Amino acid sequence: MALFGLGAYLTLGLVGGLIFHFPSGWEKLQTAFPNRGEKALSTLRFRSGRLGDGWKIGIHYAAMLCFDICESGLRIRLLPMFSLLSEPFFVPWSALDIEESAGFGVNLDFGKPMVGTLVVSQSVARQVRRVMQRV
Image 1 (cartoon, rainbow, N blue to C red):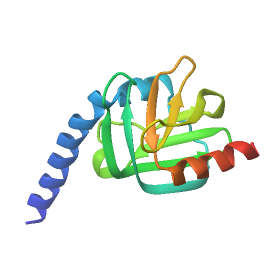
Image 2 (image 1 turned 90 degrees about the vertical axis):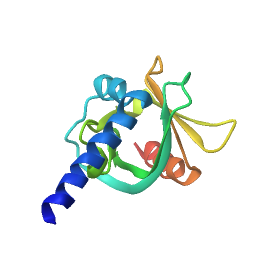
Image 3 (image 1 turned 120 degrees about the vertical axis):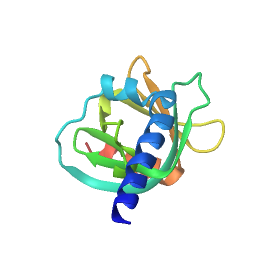
Image 4 (image 1 turned 135 degrees about the horizontal axis):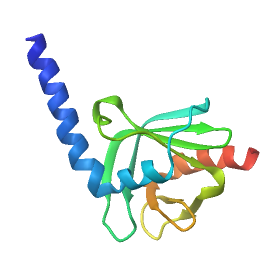
């Protein structure tokens, strides 16, 4: 029974990773913004967001995202079960713009020129802005 559980976990992680990784633009973001080992000042877990390249509709990550707010930037990662293919990426504050969305949520725009956009809730954006203003 334990082997079945492990097999199901790995299968779900791999299938979920494949479904989310490539269409969302995560691959492009992890290449453009490699992870850094910087210590997090604050971590937001089990958050949701919609990640896409702008022209795509995007992939909705429901309670799968973790945000590590660091001194020099923002690390975004997936919960371990869904991160088999998706490495965390680290966006320096200088490459991050936060702007109100015409629809639901707030856009986190990554890169100048823009590499990708993550739409998050007002509460996530508020907490990220708070740290950005201090540094």
